[in-house]
Image (cartoon, rainbow, N blue to C red; front, side, top):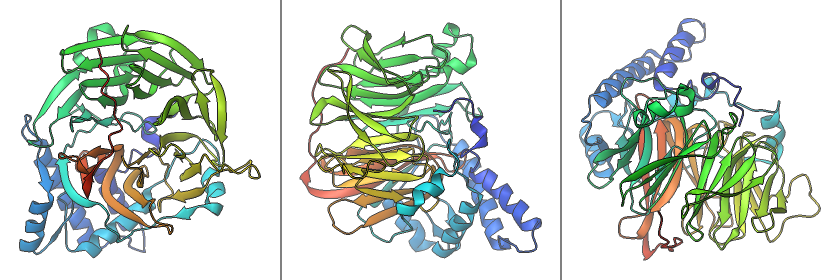
Amino acid sequence: MDRTTRIQDYELENSLLDFYFNSIFSSTNSSNKLFTRKELMNLMINYERSYYSNHMCCTGTVSSIDAESLNILNRDSTTYVDIQGLSWNDPEQRANIFNKRSLFFKSYTNFENSIEMSSHNCTRLANSNNEYWYFNKFFIIPNMYLNHFQLRNLVAFNELNEIIYVENKLNQVVGSSDFNVKRLNPINSKQEVIFASNDFSNDYGDEESLKVSTLNSYKDLVISGLYNGTIIIHNKGSDLTLKHTLTTNPQAITNFIDINSQDNELLISSNDGKLRFFSLSVLKTSREIDAENPINCLTKNPLNYNQILLAGDRPESVIIDKRSNRDCLELTGHRDYSFSCDWNPNGYLVATGNQDSTVKLYDLRYLSKNKEDDNSLKTLGGKLKGAVRNLKFDLDGNFLAFGESLDNVYCINLQENELNYQSINFIGKITGLNFIRNQNNFGQLLSIGISDECTGGILQYAFESSSKVIDLYNDGEFI
């Protein structure tokens, strides 16, 4: 992760408010009007309505829009209401606005021309009318926390079907160190604060230290990483919250946290290039592996927890064996730094997402020996050519979802020989993406965190199934 870059310079500036003012500027300073008067009026109305109504909501519950109420709104209204509750003249106007919004977007890269270099063998995805997943609900949370444009794992979903997220305290600016980590019950929309920045404010004199960089959850356990190499662990069952300093290295931002239920440990990747194994039994670091480069994301083999995929500040990703600390496989083909990765439940398919705007799929059984510069199976990318900072396989391994920096998520159907996918569009920056079981274990929910002061929240799409979701989770006990 590039810490020297000012966070407001890239990929965070496309909020609905920024987009509205950019739209006005482009329409008043150009002979070729980019936006019509009706489009500008719609943007203004949506901004005012969303901002004031969202910030007036009750603090004990979260307002939401579900599929049934959305259908009623669109049946009885002369306008078109979308999945975030925004009102348009019709679906075509919304699509036109999204196309024009893309003109204001620029994705950050560490290597010059990495997007152009990666595009020659990349299949770019556009809007698709396929509907494998159906809109279920949108929880309206306008203060969704997003601190650094490269770190997008700030929403977690656990086996209790709870949504864990970080929220800027009311009236605080994006990137503030004043935050709440909250738990949302998606059934009754009730939310509660798990812990807050002021619980630890006396421990740190440096405001930068209190910024949350990553978040994860498993059953009763919630873990957040901070900028200063500290983790905060909360156990719902015991109502215990503790903090632990992994390192005092000022470069050791906690980039990613994974949970190994079999060995009762956390796998923590940091910006100082260390992979740390933190024992939840004795609450201390058991050992470290030096990866030399900052590690931005990691994932373990679901069939063999000793194998770990590391993606970070280098074009190549590596699979290591934690028993020997040795690299087992190198995955090649990207042109920039990687910030997302996941391992399919089948054990042999993995995916990585990169700032070169692509997702690469690798079949570990058939890595090409003749293509040392790119041993991937397939390369995909979104229409914005935006960095891919979030991706995830579904719980059955039949779908792969990935998101560009903002506005677009694509869900690839891996069961079909031909490339078929569903596109999901919204306004906002992605702060998290994952699949969780549906309440009755039949089917799944694709959940997407969205940061925007007007349109932010949690978006959920449902996939119905007649059989229960594969149980990939161990019932290990935690602290």
